Length: 270
Ligand SMILES: Nc1ncnc2c1ncn2[C@@H]1O[C@H](COP(=O)(O)OP(=O)(O)OP(=O)(O)O)[C@@H](O)[C@H]1O
Ligand SMILES: [Mg+2]
Image (tube, rainbow, N blue to C red; front, side, top):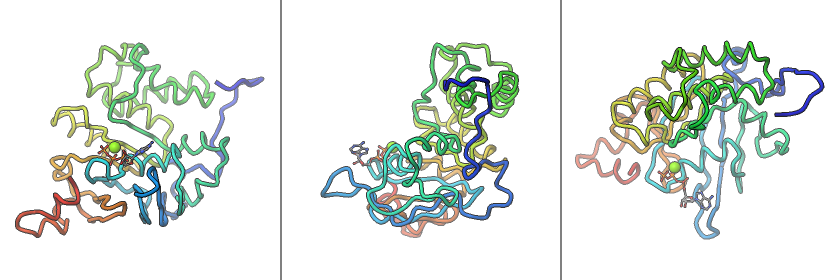
């Protein structure tokens, strides 16, 4: 926690007030990937000349076979890695140009959820969610009310005092979602958030992300689970040969669906 003479609430830079609360008069896309190329291996780019625009308020699945680059795409957005060519604009700002000092401000406008939850097992549910606000030096009273609101939104009302290790997998993921949304980020990045869950829990968590989307946050939901994708008509972004191939309304509008044997779909989406 940063040391300060007196406790102050640290707000993201004005430029980065990209959260759902401040989206009203901003019609720029929340995210633009412009000709993005990323190499991990000099001979074979993982992403090659990838273009993608995401408008505020969208819900999109990101799919593609294992190794296609779904996680890499999300990691570039939260600047775990940097692009080798091209640009990523978040709320109109080129994230490659952020100084290291500014990266936390970017991340405060992002909510990130992982397959393995990444909750601290020996902390309480409350502590796991509160940490996202405590690092902003938010006053305790405000932290308490914001955390209890977030827990209510994920269906864990009144569970704040429980130790996280005693929760089920689905409940732990709800804690992780509460932690991701408690700062009211503009963009939620979910990387296989249902990968460790039973099918019925996977639907519950998907529905939870949809509810969050309905309150204004943009959601990118990476999954290779076609049974999940098939249940919804969301925009479907598939990574094929390092580029984006997409359908506007789920698998039903996917070009491969028109083939009798569905081979196009399996070839691109694993
Ligand atoms: N930090 C890294 N160092 C080297 N290579 C990497 C790194 N991260 C990813 N890669 C490589 O980039 C490619 C894309 O990996 P990525 O994890 O993005 O795929 P994915 O679509 O998320 O796969 P999965 O469905 O298995 O999660 C893979 O070939 C992977 O080995
Ligand atoms: Mg992945």
